[in-house]
Length: 415
Image (cartoon, rainbow, N blue to C red; front, side, top):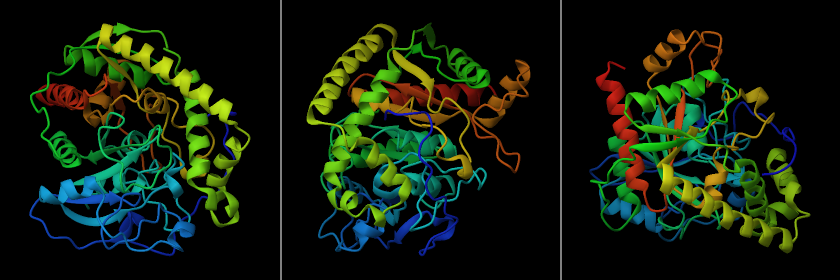
């Protein structure tokens, strides 16, 4: 998105008219199956339930879905037990995870922190052990940001690899689906559920990475470096490859398409969250020419980033390059500056938290005790530092394998 560094403030609700424990779900489900439990973001059709997109306006006219979305069909065939339609930012148009209509999912690390969005309910469900795996969608970071905020793993798949049929659209040029979970084996399971075919579970991990440092926290950057080096990933320092420009055009693409996918919300904006309306309002003046120019810039960015990956390996950077905000400061800055560019590029990306003991050890070793890193809750609990790895198109499995290698190395070292 483009604009100033400060968003228009909207409502910061403390609860909603429908309450499940921790506000993680909009509707609970009872499902047969003998496999792990699955929470499905309420943008994705589940037969017999309404798809509300987290919006009272959409819910007011929605009828129960007549069939599952293909990604749900595939999951059921592999034994998934669906436990609920997960809560989200209204219309999936925001990275904070706040929802004034169904209650804001409660961050499991510290309740005054944002849960991250838009797949907030999905992240909270897996972080709290309510579901083994959750489906989220990611248009500008909406899997990776809540994964970072709640200390879980989230995978944005390659654009177009998972079917978005039966999924409420935000921006077709950017929308993707992916799994969130606590562990790498669960991510493998969730990824396998998305597709009709088999995964390449023998994919070779990336053994080299181009390091992009954008964080204002030395602790975040040093911790990522130390984790990769310990796993013997060869690092090459890279100049920023135009993330700011890609972020700007990503906002134009997302906003232009979101307006056209939500004409009712735009025309009846008094019935939606003011914070969401502020985003629509930013892009109402964008023309078709602006939009097509943004698409062309996006194609060039995708080519340049893909070339970097070809030459240096996976790109490694912070998922969120600053502290996870509190609810009261939720709208003070743009949270998707490190994530949206890779939706523009259409590339797969995984975000995973580093073990708390490892983060603590690095902080002490480098004398960074006063650096708040990814953030500290009012309860004193630190948000674990998360790494984002970006791979070439179609290398979803290789990214999961790389994350597995890094985390296994840290575990073998006692972390």
